Length: 117
Image 1 (cartoon, rainbow, N blue to C red):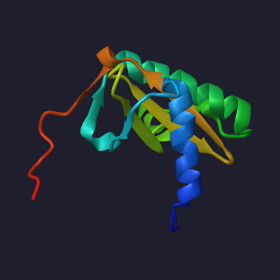
Image 2 (cartoon, rainbow, N blue to C red; image 1 turned 90 degrees about the vertical axis):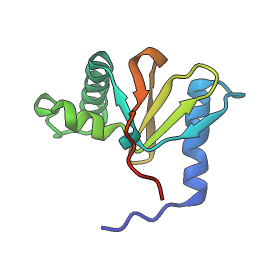
Image 3 (spheres, helix red, strand yellow; image 1 turned 180 degrees about the vertical axis):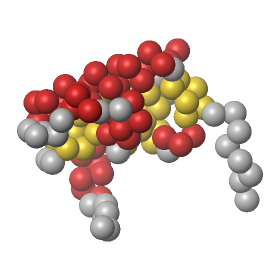
């Protein structure tokens, strides 16, 4: 399955994240593989993913959702808010985006990002 990005859809998703952080926020998109999150953040993400699935994905069986699946659910877009130092994780479900703020004390960049060439 190919995932072709529509530039207009991408801009709309960034706008959604900016609403979460404030209109004048400076957001930087990150690769989720470069960050680590706290166990409290994982619990919050799992609760949020379960709630979205229950409400917007009938038949999805959210009670079977693992922590890893919940995290994967919320990493369609990951933004770092320059002002608050927090993260905003976004899930794209059908025609909607659901974004979840993660406070600055519940995540950090991984220390070993490998060799950059």
